[in-house]
Image (cartoon, rainbow over all chains, first blue to last red; front, side, top):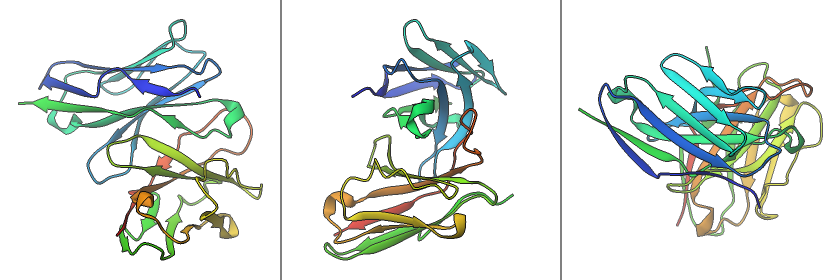
Length: 113
Length: 117
């Protein structure tokens, strides 16, 4: 079946640098994408979302880019801080799926001092 | 404001016993989801409730799993005759979608960590 996956399982960045977390999806019918952050022992926390009619969306220190041509999603975190250390999941859904989310396996982001 | 709450936070049980996990969604949210997260993995969809409609049970892994939602609010996920492979974190999410239009953000609770010995 189709799935959402991440290119890299781990990512280490220096504090203050920018982080880029990538995600590939294979379901061309997906029309909604979300990035979640999950800290140890906690539930996923919403970061930012984007609909398929958009290419880019910005939030506070975060930007999500969507490239539908190659079915690629990325999360950019500006000026990465120690509190950004967590597992980041991309998730996708489409209107025909009762809006259930299909999650990738996650990327562990570690911010180095 | 109050988010999604789940209880218990941790549950240890013996193989073959039944367990009940509870979810209190955000007040006013009509949609409620259950997911399962195995160690180091992403989330796996289990079941979805939307208002008074029949639930979407397409993600339930076996007939040992069932869920109900009373009064359109609190939900209980029941696992009968638990097996060791049921050990995981069970996460509940809710959203305010009305059933039409685009999807709304799902907000997650802290999860229940289930350990089957």
